[in-house]
Each structure stands twice: as C-alpha cells, then as structure tokens.
Length: 208
Image 1 (spheres, rainbow, N blue to C red):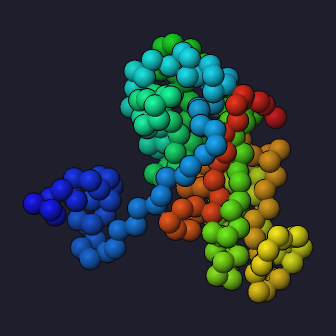
Image 2 (image 1 turned 90 degrees about the horizontal axis):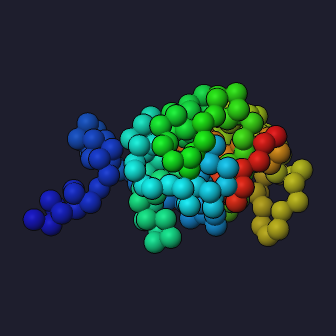
C-alpha cells in the first residue's frame, strides 16, 4: 500500500525512467523559487497576464516542452506558470500566443519573440560544479541560443567568499542585455538538487 502511494506521488516522467531503466536511480530536481513569476513572451507584463488569464489551460495543453504548468500559488491559482525542469522555451515556438483567447498572451511571431526579454539568468555560484567541485562543465553556455553566457576563468572574476581552488577553472559569465529568459541554461544545468543558474522574471517584458 505504501509503495503504491509513493508511486502515485512521482511525476509520470520519473515513473517512465524507472520502468525503462530498471535499477537506474531517479533524480527529481527541486523546482526553482523565483522572486517574480515568469510569464510567456507576449504577456506584456505580469500584471496584464494575471488580470486577463482565465486559467482555461489552452496554452498549457499546447506547450510542446512542458514548460507551462498550472500554478499552485494562491495569487494565481491554476494560471500557467513557467518552469524548466522538463524543457525550455524555444525561441521559434509561439503556440501559446496563438491559442490564448483573452489577450493574456498577445500574438507574437518567432522574430518578435527572440527580441522579448521575459527574464534574465542568475548564477548561483555555490551550486555550480566548476565552483563547488572544481570540474569543467559549461552546459549553460553551450546551450544558450542567444550567446548570452560565456565561460571565463574564475581568476578573472572577483568573488565574495571562497572561490575555486584553481583560478584557471572556467565559470559562467552572464550578459543580461543578451539574455531573453528562455531557460535553456536552467534546463541543461546538471547541478542537483537545484540548478546553479536560473531565470528570474521581469515585471514588464521589454525588448532588446
């Protein structure tokens, strides 16, 4: 009975991994806690999105990367919220803006979407593998579609507190002016139990 209850509590993708892999251990990443919610490109602002969204679920059902999911916050219960444990918001995808019936997400083209900044990446150095374990990584920089992240020598940065033992180890440097908040860096970060880089939301969506 207890085993059945635990199985029901696991996400479906975790159960599939267990079934396919047999004894492969399951890793479920902690969901990032953001100061401001992330809303899809075309929402104009967090206030506009929350005010106009009726929680119909159309955008959630159409999101091919499973980035959109129902919010559990009392302030925006069941309205879509963005999270990158399962995927990231690809710049060429505009499906959520095409199906929204209320104007909570206004229609955008892929070209417009690549210029809209819904948030910016934030690096948490204490969780970053090059910083905490002295190992090379660079996943965030490799997968960033806007080249907003580059790897630089730790010795070239000014750290507060203890830095990597090897000043030649490379750590991420974020250009906030290039970052649009797509979440690729957060999704592909191998750090556990939470990503060492995450997307913080913007109250209003601004363009480059």
